[in-house]
Amino acid sequence: MNGYFDHNATTPLHPAAREAWLRASDKHWHNPSSLYRDAGLAAQQLESARERLGTLLGIEAERLVFTSGATESNNALMALFDQVAVSSIEHPSVRMAARNAVELPVNANGVVEPETVQSLIATKRPALVSVMAANNESGALQPWRKIAALCRGQGVLFHTDAAQWIGKLDAANLGECDFVTGSAHKFGGPKGCGFIVLPADDSKLSFLRGGPQENGRRAGTENYPAVEAMVTALETITPRLREIEMQQSQRRDAFIAAMRSRFEDLRVISESAPRLWNTVLMVMPAHHNLKWLTALSRRGFSISTGSACSSGKEGSSVVVTALGASADELRRVVRISSGWDTSAEDWQALTEAFGEAWAELSRGGRPQ
View 1 (cartoon, helix red, strand yellow):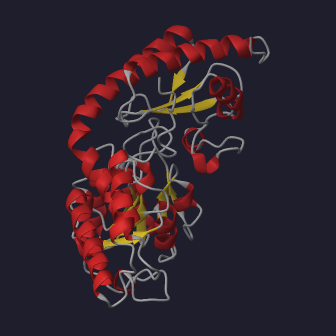
View 2 (tube, one colour; view 1 turned 180 degrees about the vertical axis):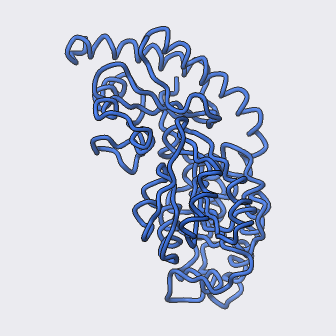
């Protein structure tokens, strides 16, 4: 039984990624920026990985800059612009880093509507619009392709934080965005590795100085083994995505139905919107979410109270806050996020664990 249901926070290292990392670390551990033969071979392998990732994302390889992850990428991007329009449900690494931010509200399903973006562009003329591809808490899919086309037509740059989209849904059209950010550990790659996609016609953007690496855009010795592991993880997962989406979305929906049969007043956030196949954000009918987390953890299940980057804070759910929830509701929010191979039995076991936790919490939190 696999009780790990916090894949939107981080994922286990994929076996293929682990093998790729070990192989690269053993054979091509040299500094790709050095001038001797073995370093040159490492540089060739790094550029090959860049080409392969570009193919997976539908992006020219020269647009890709490798970073330590989506947080670094988002912060670096936000620092380049004086006024940014960001959605009210963006990850903290976008919202907190944006300067002179103008907020884009969401509708009742937690989705940014293109008409809202168009209206804001007409009145505010931001230098950049940033709307994530898929929400990390509710799983709600955002119409990023429509917004990207809209921004392009208005001469405004567009960024999507695709950290939750990549590795779960087809990423081949991300090249339509001016800027894209992603993180390896969200799809079976190693922590501390990610990327930012920059516009094809802009070679002047630079955000970390000190050396000529990444075409002068990000200084520092390139971490080729981590990059190789990241690309290998995505290459391994991508061919299975359509089958996984069909199978896992059915299991997710069966879980929701089973939970509703146990908890009459259960509320599922963004349930009417297209969502990631692995994500359920729920407002429980009673009891503090940290108590739910603790009771389930004792039973071998890992869930979260919302974004891992906001954990431990009262009312940490950005999405539920944006939808106007009460303080009491915010304290009852839990997030479930499964993996690519989570079985029907795993989902059923989680349902049973929720039932046991409810009985325990109703007794005053005293386990038997």
